[in-house]
Amino acid sequence: MTKKIKKTSLYIILVLIALTQLFPLYWLLSFSLKSNIEIFGQNVIGLPQDWRWGNYVRAFTTGGIFQYFFNSVFYSAVTVAVTGLLSAMAGYALTRMHWKLRTLVFGVFTLGIMIPTQAALLPLFQVLDKLGLKGGYMGLLIPYVVFAIPMSIMILTGFYKGIPKEMEEAAYIDGCGVFHCFGIIILPIIKPALATASIFTFLGTWNELMFANTLVDSDKYRTLPVGIMSFAGQYSTDWGLIGAGMVIATLPTILIYFMLSNQVQESLVAGAVKG
Image (tube, rainbow, N blue to C red):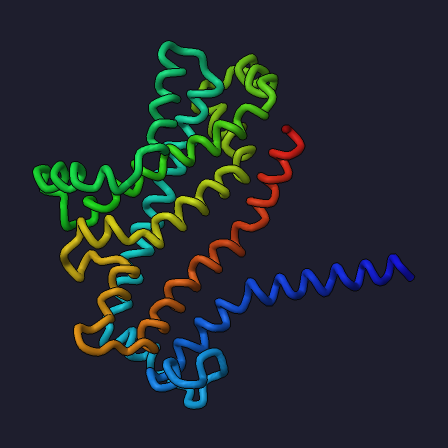
């Protein structure tokens, strides 16, 4: 009987935690379907009395959110792909190969995590402006990739160290080259760690606001967070419209997590076993 009570109590606690975690998502959805009167009135957390689906229609038609959404998808996809490829190769070279200055190079990448993006904003702005890259796609892609690589390398190097070297030695004996060994043997093994690093890279790129607001000055290249911020008017703001934009911006992150959640779990379990 005592065991059953403990089990029931545990389930109740877990359900309460789950509801607590899901409440912000519920609030955001209901927020996006309300008018300003409901949002700032007595019906703050309740369901909408007048379901304003037109907020989503106006977000795509008059708000220009489709262009912002496309830009964010483009920036995130390119950043994840380029960062994943470069980090995987750099991490392999840093952990599986012996060459001079390897420790120094790894220290430089580690130092990149410690540099706050705010401190690099002004020099980066000046450099990109002189190179003629500010204001376009490359003006954001370069900072996104550069600032995402150090964290990805830190994640992947820890995973590389747990892979037995005998697998590569056997491949080299059979005549495999470095690139062939990396692509055929190592790359499939590090898929869980690569998925974990990709999620961090995607979230950092998708939700980034400071670079996108500073380095881009045209609606053609603006990202979703900057576009949603522009919905706020000087004298009045339609908060339901902003809520609709926030829901649209949140859905891809949830989708990406569900797509890669199994890989992330495998990475965590593999890391725990190897540790």
